[in-house]
Amino acid sequence: MRKIKANNATRLLTNYINTAVMSGILITVYSVTFNAFLDKTDGGFWYLFLIWVFIAVLFILSAYRILSIMLLILNKLAEYENSEGFGKNQITSSDNLEIKLDNKR
Image 1 (cartoon, rainbow, N blue to C red):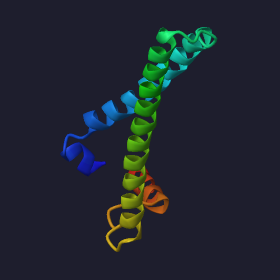
Image 2: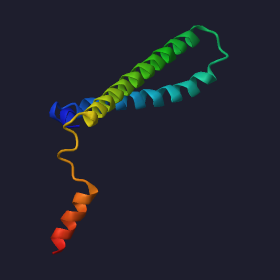
Image 3: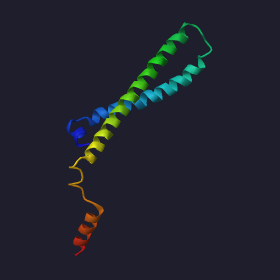
């Protein structure tokens, strides 16, 4: 998270998530509307279908993008936890207990 904040990528990640969520909501609403025109086979139907395909592809690509970024972050975190440097600066629950006991004295 420090690297994400240091590179000002928090806003970028938020935009990626918003794109995936908004396109998912849009495809849901559009699918319900599209269902009303399903039995019509005139030229307008095919334009609606092409728009639906575009929104579906946008949703799939944006969901894949944010999931791959999240998995990359989790993999880097797992690698960091397995490295030797992890845990040197962490306070364990026994350390917390010692600090609380020292503060009470």
